Length: 110
Image (cartoon, rainbow, N blue to C red):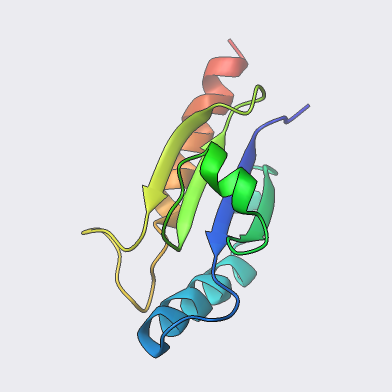
């Protein structure tokens, strides 16, 4: 049974134009991300403004933020904001988290 989760914190409103574009592009990426590519790991898109306590728990202060959690809810991998491997058009590093998921599942199956 898969107990890992991917949390993606996004801004759904009250963002400046450039921030909104990046968040909208992240949502487009997630909508096109096949379940198979993430090995069936659950995906949760969260509004940072509505899930303030959860964002604080995981020290998320900007969006988009992508977290891979283990079965205990501990962070295994994270991406905060647009990084050197991403762009405003494709702000989430989905290949990196897919690789982390695969490694995690391989470790759990041993």
